[in-house]
Image (cartoon, rainbow, N blue to C red; front, top):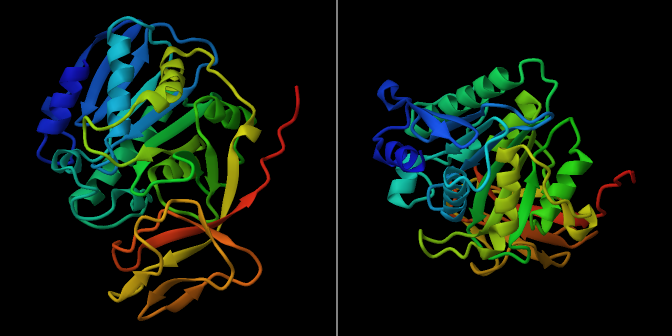
Length: 341
């Protein structure tokens, strides 16, 4: 199953669904269905009561390889019979051509295109539309009444080093994150949480905003080529993913073990003459004092840290497309209040 899925995914020359790619088979405790290149559905023979309907995606950026290797381990252990399938799960490798080329994207950043009215004819635009369609159809098949837990973990690695190598991005949404999710993420080795302040149109935001799922972008270390990833720090995350597939409880740790931040502003590249005014090796969550110049843009001018509070920089990247976000500016906040049982 794993070999067939990877072969179909990486042998595909396009982002589009291919009718002849559909394959089905058995895994311990259930069955699989390769719906399209990079889209694999797992359905249990007997669903564990109250189990979560889960989407787990990786490879939305093709050079972020650790999550792909992590998913490979999860599936290999399922195939080996180390745990049985007990819950419906949709697994996605998001950007197969970019994965093959070991590049972040081919034409444009796929992780800014998950909006229902998105237009555009690039391969990435078409892929975004296919993935949105498949995720919505999956949730409708397995939770038509919207009365079961829905979850989407979109797995990434960051371009930069980070003061918190493993952190979660909570998309902006009307519905709050459940207390259990904070405890599960803490138990899976997540060290920090970053809450978005506005719509971002990422893949996890799509599932949360449109489909009512608990959705998160999970940054699991730094970008590295295949074979150069240290997966040892991701063992707790692997155990959480396996628990989701098995439909069983996973380890929980108090949310207070994680640092919490909220976004207060963004740096946007508005012209071709744009620069970030700090070194390229600046780590995520590095703090800058009030008055510090962070960016210069020929159109937008100079951006300084406001006088009232220091700000930390996350996801700095001066080489984004014009009009795209070049960095998030965040500051620490208290952990959410979680009722005691």
